[in-house]
Amino acid sequence: EVQLVESGGGLVQTGGSLRLSCAASGLFYDDYAIGWFRLAPGKEREGVACISSGQGTKYYADSVKGRFTISYRGRTATLQMNNLTPEDTGVYYCASRMFSRRKTIAGVCSTGGTEFDSWGRGTQVTVSS
Image (cartoon, rainbow, N blue to C red; front, top):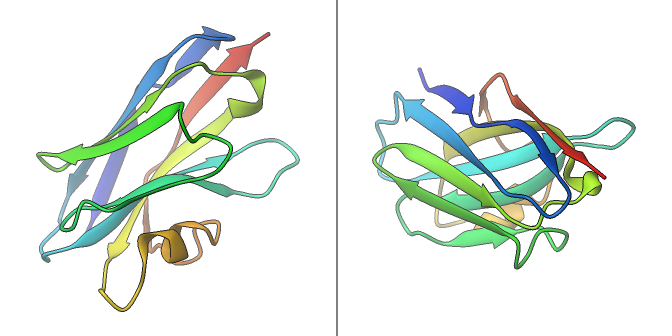
């Protein structure tokens, strides 16, 4: 059973930075898609960034390109978030699924998380103006 535990959320001012971590266990296959999704009040869940643990390919939502960086090492997925704005506020969830070469990282990440089957409990990120 895959278990994911997020950490690193908090309150930050506009323009600030936060680093989220997702500690993963139970990953027994060669390749997983691991992603960060956020849920903001009144909005649908959005795939922010995803990475293939085996291939290293990455996906970023347009809204975070150039500001967020996802990485994966030692069964920990990290999301470095820079130049944060109030629009980045929300609960950030780490999620995973087995990843097949028949799919693309963008394809599984851009569907709001419906392609993912293991989820963490989430961590709150609040950006004040």
